[in-house]
Image 1 (cartoon, rainbow, N blue to C red):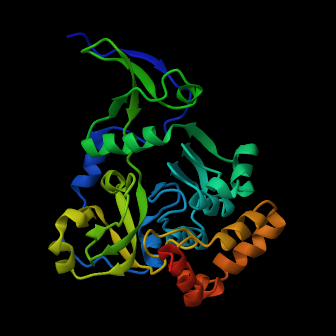
Image 2 (tube, helix red, strand yellow; image 1 turned 90 degrees about the vertical axis):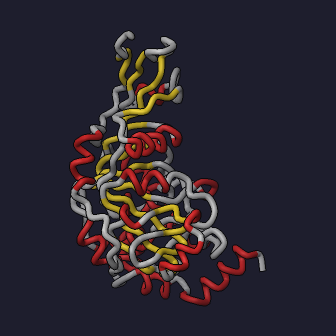
Length: 328
């Protein structure tokens, strides 16, 4: 059989090590015990997020985003973070506004979908304050998949014949069976993943209602996982229907009880996104002179996510958003 041949390489920088055996050295030492992992958001970020770490965020767009954790990253002044910009909208906007990231694997960032563009996020690129490597949404998701499979890369046909390939860190290889040219997507092992879920037990066995996007693989690819959850349920509740367990306890390092934790994003079947507040974000983040007092008010000047929610309308606002989501 002919040896697999390396053909072409994109010009992008590879920000993480795809070597599965080196990743396994870390995972081998990670405890799989079912112990109580509940803690506050501030403790979880303090314990498991270090300056210079590479971060990945679960959810999709403004749906099921772990807002409380992202705010806490800014409060604690974490710096020089890398980011997997898989489907990043308001999450990227928050990190960009706080100057927390300096490198990003880009599939979808800067835009908040139909709402418009974050100018604070865009400035990072215009002023060359962030290193960039480009991918597609599928490519980043499959990089998690490669990590979960314990292989250094996964072959695909995505990005062939596009400028995205040349701006990525992917390479092309020859298939040893067919001779076809394929793209080799390197495995992605984030240092830490933030994922917001509908419910979890105290150990980190978690359920997600609706589409999980790439979070099944993300939770298994990341070296450390911090969950925020709408509710904490008894383990017997999880065991009653184990087929719904998307994330298992042995992946998880911290479980934080954060009701409404995706706000101002949408939480499927629970509450709609706060379009007024997202519009307010977009209105102020275009100018540092308006962005700073906004961040001081809503993030740096609040002690936690609960205070932030109160500033935004509290239970009354969430009830309105709940009715909107359920079309009551």
